Image 1 (spheres, one colour):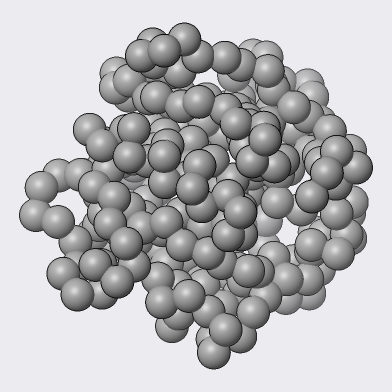
Image 2: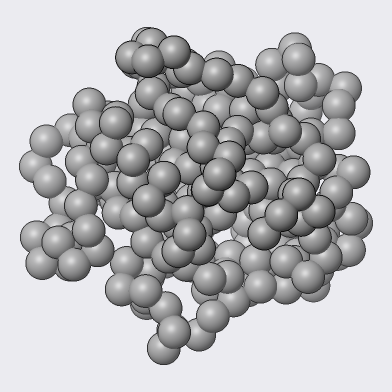
Length: 257
């Protein structure tokens, strides 16, 4: 990885010691950027937009997650980089989530783990092996598992935290900024989705070409961009977009108010 590989929407934010990086759902969220980790070590603008969306529309997101579900909800973040978005989701949906799998390539797992452990008031961090043996915890915090996931790999190549699983909610930001990422990303969406899975993907339109959306349609997915009025003011009228993605045979499930 390097600067030439990065999306073009770096979002500069800082933190000061034990000061919360953000407050989401009236809960403090702690996060330290570490750009030395790689391009996923910091917060890009599309990630910030999704985090603000979680914060500003918590009730509608919770309603959408519960729609058609009688039991607990499983979620997976693709291309997390730093764990921040997963912590923000936990802050608004902690009592709904049973399992939160936070994924990226191996070189980012330590930072993701650090972020999740620093927010132990929101998530209970366990290894994939511990989760397979013990399952979810009994308290209100969702169980968070940090795992490597390479998009588009076969089941035989998959990590134990992801192998053979379908998730109720899939999310990620800045995940389609290069053409060669499109096919493996869509392959992972396809393999990790059941017929009712709801996905929320954030992209920068200047980086993500129309071919990505055509490939989504060709793979049997439908998509809808969230309207500007649902975004925070600083992200309206920009190239940043949040897209709801579902399998095409179902009518679109709205995430709005």
